[in-house]
Length: 65
Image (cartoon, rainbow, N blue to C red; front, side, top):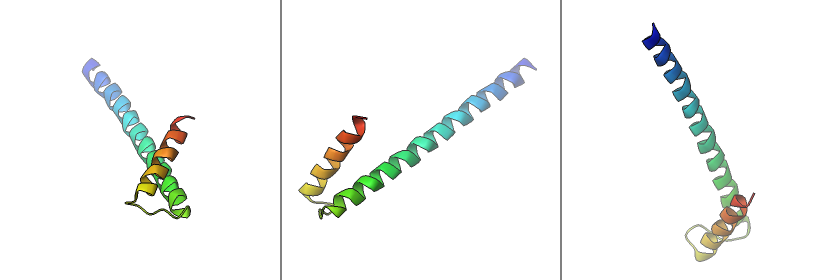
């Protein structure tokens, strides 16, 4: 009985970790898409130095919050 209780607790904890990982993955993808659109709206295209500089600037700005 004790072993099944431990197994149930472990599954509960692990399922919470998976949900948290999914949340962060979705959040990071949304931030990246927003940054991509922002840089493109300035007229810089992926693969250029300007685009890289724009994305690095936005990443640094995001991390400051």
